[in-house]
Image 1 (cartoon, rainbow, N blue to C red):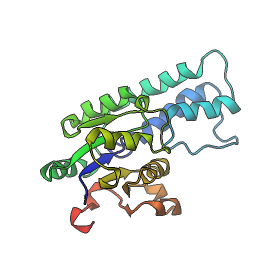
Image 2 (spheres, rainbow, N blue to C red):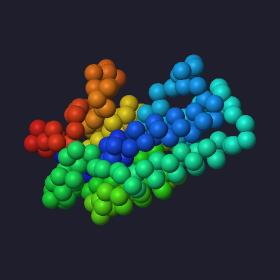
Image 3 (cartoon, helix red, strand yellow):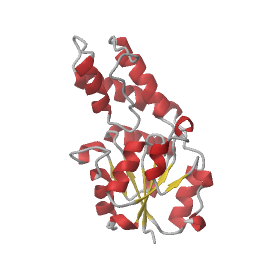
Length: 214
């Protein structure tokens, strides 16, 4: 049924979401952003640029441009990934099993190329993937389907033959809009949230995934 598997990166290949949170709190907070003031933002799955634009619109800061702040956040997360990033539970075993099954694989992330390259290098998994899709390659990030459609195109596989692993609602929405089958891996604090009902399957970690059950 499936010829390809496409993975989101942050929160799926690697547990980088705490680093994003730390970066936003430290850098945006240092610029005076009060995250408790409305309009509040659920940033998981959004592009970094979208998060920065939201806070800059409602709580603008002096001196630094949004682009400069964006680069500071990216550099913070990249440094953390390079020094201490670890693969998500069960990931390496699943990648090896997918390769054994001769399934094509891709990464499709809202993050920039620097973070994609840093993550693949840190985890030593670049060789598993035939396509590496990052935000600069598409005109719209998730929840638009563009990056998943690009990944399928680069793999030479129809969207309906792709299985996607995603941790965010924005990512699940993007993959479903692309016509793909989606396995959601929500963060523990979002496990019960009804929004993930749009996914085809839901697991807590890769160790729970079983090809035989699809």
